[in-house]
Image (spheres, rainbow, N blue to C red):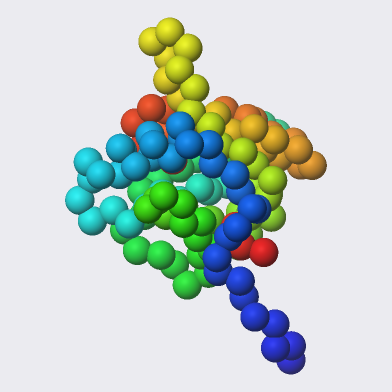
Length: 125
């Protein structure tokens, strides 16, 4: 049996732009009992992997957290394997506002847009 320690704090595995942090803070401040935002991965069928973001009330046992400017961004260890190296940004183009994930799924294929969060809503090594 191995005595490997699980790293729960993220450093540079996921990068988040100042604009994205600002938007995430603004969104989570409007919600009661929200501790941060979770980035998750799903799919794997013929459409490839997809991702999304959701509010977090409480961290899970196997969560990794990136703490930046008072914002907690959670990723479970399995999702981190697919998201490591991602850069999260927030872009405004005219009336369209959205979170943009850059370099997502570079090695596994998948989408680089976030349909689950838009302007309203969302690893450990």
